[in-house]
Image (tube, rainbow, N blue to C red; front, side):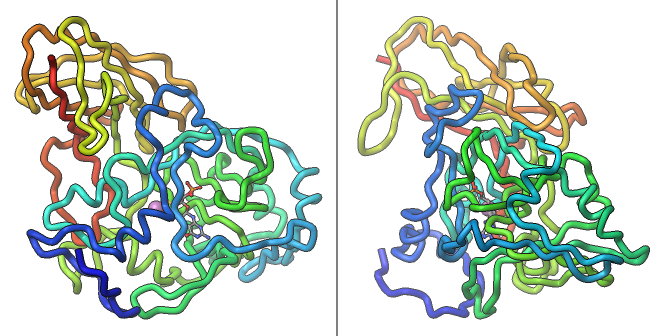
Length: 367
Ligand SMILES: Nc1nc2c(c(=O)[nH]1)N[C@H]1C(S)=C(S)[C@@H](COP(=O)(O)O)O[C@H]1N2
Ligand SMILES: [Mo]
């Protein structure tokens, strides 16, 4: 493990084939925690167990003096405060959020960044007010193209000093389910999840849900900020402009069965019936099939699906595994959504480690 930090401004890097996780990656991993997979048991992820991703620092924002200007290509610029948002129609959506970098550390070679394995996911009840009517009141100019959401957080990323900012296109932002959110699971948004107000764009990978909102600007040209044009792209090499990362690809995860070994997290179960269960989700439609393999992906059995709790929340699945013979096993799970998109077992690689929905693999010893 190298203890020398990369210089700020270094380009996105891919680890050498035998290069372990660096101290720089560990600094990110220690701040940005995943959801322990045993929390897949809950319909709504209990407070504190939801994954967390913060590019820079958690900004301190005073909710009493907080204001949200809506400016740019609008007829009537607006400024809202928290009381104004709270008097508007109140809507709650249960939404599964997943970081676009989830699974990054499973790519070979490994793109160097926040080294997620499988756990950058969580489901929360997000309460706020729909954004579309607010933008309609502001009066979008007929030639408006994108809406840019900027946070109060500031940093540098690959040499570019910036406030965290992401845009959505006008059609995407006018979706009635896009919310300005001030509560998570029935309580005011906690600091780490975007207090006092964040965006929730159901179905999209995490980067679109801008936290600590500072302003909203409507623009007439496609937004070319770092997080849209450079960071969240599916690229094959450094010069490739790549395709934008958008909606969450289908994925299933299981609660690792039995009990773990401390150092390796390998699972230990007894011979007999082993209940396997977990959750599955997709940002492009309902999951219609979940399959399990207990032989490393050679043969598959279909799991039983629980009810779909809403258009944007994960659904449960379960299957009983008859573990008759002692030995070492590799369990896999994969989901297919209503559009017929299935999780790959071997992941096609991309240079920034984005949108990896390769089937989960869990090492188990039956004793
Ligand atoms: N302002 C701001 N918003 C942000 C981020 C950020 O660093 N700054 N991170 C984004 C990313 S990459 C993800 S995955 C989600 C994580 O949301 P959570 O921490 O509430 O789970 O927030 C998004 N919104
Ligand atoms: Mo993310």
